[in-house]
Every structure is written in structure tokens, then in C-alpha cells.
Length: 241
Image (tube, rainbow, N blue to C red; front, side):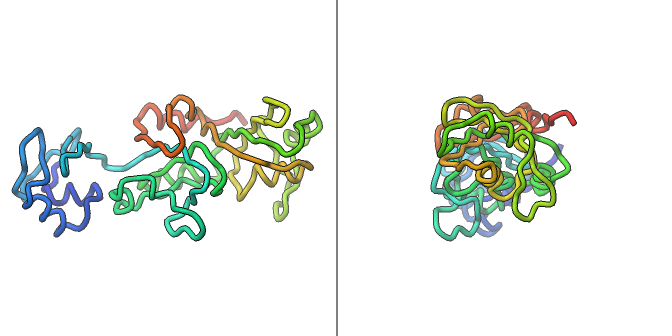
């Protein structure tokens, strides 16, 4: 079991500096089990801890693992340049905890985006050595043809890439709609693959990462949720090589 003083616990959860957290406690804004806590030195058991700050309920989490249904017009950057940043969709505590996107989606690409403050998790999920497919729905400017699907499955040559890159899964869903899965996650990869195959991507939505399906998370555009152990396990579903 692990214990922290109340001020350190609040600081670890993104409520600000220790000085600010002590002031929150002194002002009577922190409660545990319905009891107002007024001593910042109080040691609290953090495992499974539930508490409130400004009457808002929280649960202690050593690390944050979050899924977002990213809407269009949002940049996956802590320092956005042309559109609102993704952290504007979350409580300010997430910024204090240095939550970051796991990889990026373009500002006009929607769908499943992971975020975390766990550096090891971010590195593992972003590693090119892993073969976890990312599944997209791509709306095409021109009609989908068997030749287009064959090219994407067989591999297309992208600028600055030494070898052709192929989709690990590609099927037609409608006259102008493809379901396509990739593993590499290179810059603008799906859009560039479609362009290299002679078509154009008019809209793009990521619907799954590994076995984690956006539809199963029941998130509307701009909505998010914490990922628990069972959802995190789905992220490790790799394709057979």
C-alpha cells in the first residue's frame, strides 16, 4: 500500500503547485469520504482513493490513459498554431500532468485518439517495432475501384520512403468509402497512400487501434473517457506477421 501526504496527492493529480494545493485544503475545498480535510500533512492511502475538490468527484490515478473521439478542427499539439489544441477538450488538471497525445491526427482527421501522461506507454504505443493496426474510414474524392484496393494492398511508393508501403487491410464500404488499416503511422500516411494510388482523401476517421473500437467506447465527437485495464489490453492486439 502507498501513502502520500494530502498536498502531495493533490499535486500528483494535477491540482497545481504544493503551495496552491495546501491553500485548497486550508480553504476547505477538499473532502474524502464526505469529510472535509483541513490538514495538508494528513497521510492518505492512494490506492482506490476517491476524493472531491470543489465538490467535483475524482479518483486517484497514478497515470492517466484516455480515449478521445477527436472532432475536426482540433490540433494534436500542446502548442497549436492555427486551431484549438486538443487539451482544451479536457480538465486543466490534464495539462498540469503533462498529458500528451499518443501520436497525432491531422486537424481535419477525426476519431479515436489516445492520450496519456505515462512516458513509457506513449513510447511503447508509438514504437515502429510494434505491429498494432490502426483502422480508418476514408472517404474518397473519386469512386473506389478494385484497382485502387489492389494498389493499396500491394503497396504504394511514398516520397522519401525507401520501399512501398501497403495497407494491412483494405475493403470497400461504399462507392466512395474505404476501410483501411495501417501499422506504421507515418505523417499523413493514409492521405498520401490514396494520393499515390491516384485518388484523394476527402475525409478521414480513425475507428480502431488494435482491438480497441471507437464504437464500443460510445463517445460522441469531443467526448472522452478514462481507459481501464480491460481497454488497455485491447491496444496490444497485433497483426500476425
